[in-house]
Image 1 (cartoon, rainbow, N blue to C red):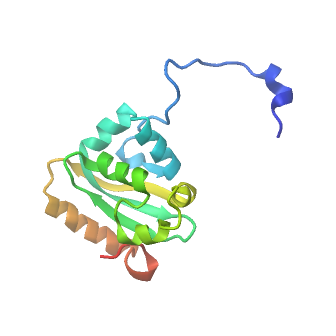
Image 2 (cartoon, rainbow, N blue to C red):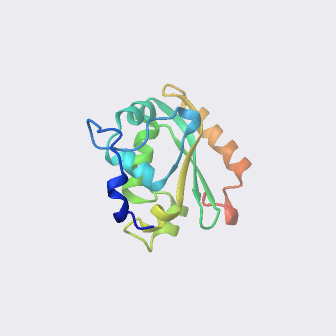
Length: 155
């Protein structure tokens, strides 16, 4: 559809104080982002997302929508999920062997932008012991069959 012929019909509904930098944080149970959305949130440093994701540890799912393969990961560092997901935005693979294999032919992140989705499966207090987070990651790997040929986890 060519919109050039309709410019006169448009009405400005709102002028934002700051440039649009992505949707507002939806709550932990509502996180389901494309790579592009996550990249925008991280690169723009959305304060609502950053504050929320820095304050929790958790288990997350990365889905390759092209192959339907899944990667289950954990974030248990001092700056929680925010720093872990920032690693993916920077590299596409976050250092994970299975994801590294998948995206090695796309150093420009094109494959990630076209096919990756991020969802938060479970979140815990930032003070939760790492062992608890690791055990929960193992649980989700088994449930979602993310190891072996069905998935992208290599451990």
